Image 1: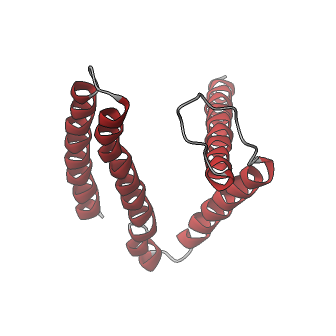
Image 2 (image 1 turned 45 degrees about the vertical axis):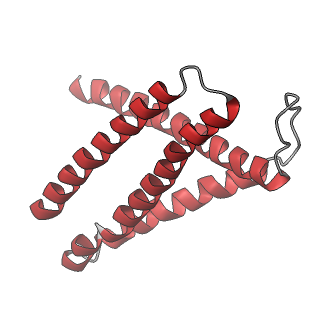
Length: 148
């Protein structure tokens, strides 16, 4: 398993370096840029975020495979995590709204599907952030109680 850890470590350093270079490009390129020039500068960052999501999804799917082969019982934990993720996205989908927002003159209106997709993502992030805070606080309290 250490080979996978080494691979992921090297991949993370490469991805971080590319991200830093793209951020510098965006900050330098948007100094006195017009709206069209700014969009041309920001587009590579958006494409990079799509690439990062794809890499994260691929690693999430393929890295646990050797562990599941060695220990089939670990597949249960992976399935629980997957089901929890699907539940969070499902709840987000239920609460998402495709309602048009007022927009600033000069901007093109955004489609209902795009707004709903953005709402699903935002609500999912909020739920996961709230869950992370609860788990962190709960683990800290449990640790303090365990020490007594």
